[in-house]
Image 1 (tube, rainbow, N blue to C red):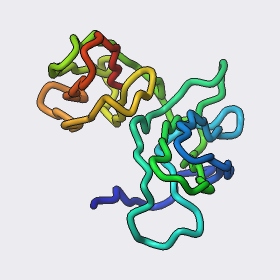
Image 2: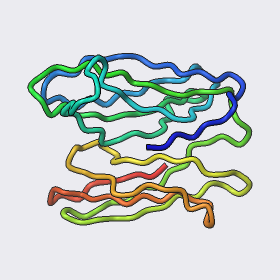
Image 3: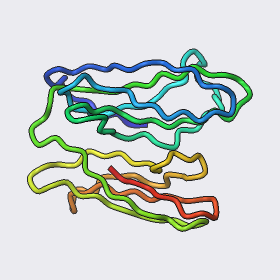
Image 4: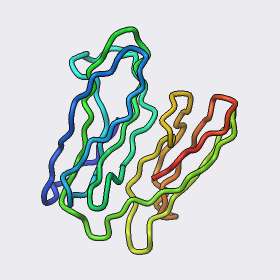
Amino acid sequence: LYAVCADPPPGYEVTGHNASMDPAEVVNEIAECPTGKAVLGGGAQVVGAGSANFGTLISTSSPASVSRGTFGWRTVIGNLTPTARDIGFRVVCADQLAGFEIVSEDLLVPGNSFGTIAVACNAGTVIGGGLGPVDGNATQEIRQSYPDTGAGQWVGTFRNIPPAERPFRVW
């Protein structure tokens, strides 16, 4: 497990909300930054469950453009147990960064197969990253996600388990 650390940028804050998740439910939530702030990261946690096997599966964890000037972090999480769970959705925000934008590319992956896609930042900007299935279906797996600094892009490889074609997106 890794974390990227730095001195706090101007306007740094971690915010979010909690939501209940019923047994066998899949929840798609966005933790929003305050208007005018940039999203730096985010995710979800099982609240009050310690550090055991929670029986949950995160299928999407990625930046989201909520509306003009409002960004957040989208997490799709499934509860694979007969026990209700409380989920904490979190987002890391800071004052708007020069050149900040969310760019993405989509890829349709045939059933029972793999696909790799990359997205490049615009000239003069540097990469961040995040990726996940577009629809957050738990039968899709992220196999790799990494910055290709030599090409100035973020690369992701997905596995689509069911026989139906599904969309994937890299941010």
